[in-house]
Image 1 (cartoon, rainbow, N blue to C red):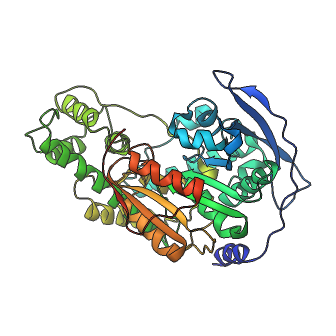
Image 2: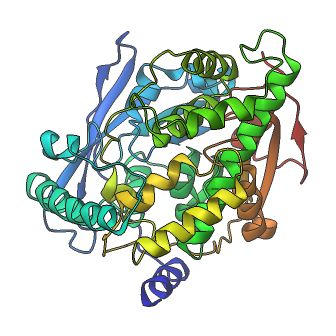
Image 3: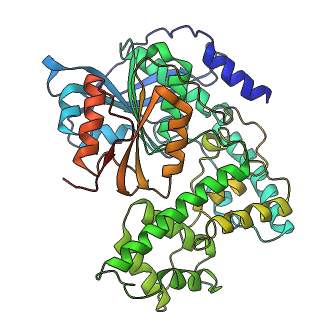
Length: 453
């Protein structure tokens, strides 16, 4: 509780602006038409004169410099998706309007690809136990494994292991804003990047020009049960939308069959070529991407005897996630109760892929940026974009964040499926671009249909 109070007080207190750094840009990108540099930041922001790291930064200069609005910083998801490649190589996610009117900048968050990446023993990572527990013995085995893994990661990574939390990332973002010479931040955060954008607006309202949050994370869950229930709802909602699509689409490989029954037969089959979590993970990936045809093809093939897919060990994003979420589980009895509750919310899919967070963070004891309800007081309301059916960041999360923001936030809904909505319809792009360029805030309750360009 004291940590939460500290977060809220920090958001209310004035924070001195960082000293602008000098950025030395060089040509980069697969077509050598972008620019790259590094920004030096402290490992521990409470010790600004201490050890430092270099953050990788990429920029695509505005095509129409004469009519440039300023700099748009893109906050990648993940956690720990690289941002530099998004603007130097894969910049087609941005509209012509944004490419014309903004220098578009992104970065690899601390601990990720180009910014002092976290290092762990790959042999130890490969030994990860099943993320779904079945007994108290599993609970104790996972707890012991986590402690051994983390000790090795910290030894290989150094002190950054203890400073990859969202509070540190917010300070990095403000340092980048200052280094770019921007008086106020214009920001587009995607998925986990929405936590960063909201946190920045909360801490630095007077340094905020416009913040767009696409595929909205709700960082206000008051308990492990609330977090798991919200994620479960989103997974079941996306699966239900997939089933509806299959029922109405003759080209679906499972058309005319009881799709939920096929899925549950696989879930309870006990086959050796895949686990229950593997099936949930594949379903999550395909529904998240709104790739319903491939999911149907996969389920039909495996139900027909084809081998199931094994995702393998999950990437180590622990200090970026576990340090931001307090998700305590005392013992297997409590864990089993949480999973039973999830199954009641999701009678078809049983539990979400995000259930792995409970076991991946089991035993983590230094949450630096705990969940809390947002207190944002920016001059321009934050703009939220979310699909109606999103397995990763459900519409339930987006609506709850809008409620927390009150008059300081407006949600626009894409009436369709998939994680990410800016690229899914011209309507969503037009609304987002008008907000970022001209600070035009749409009417509350605005909905965009599933039209593609």
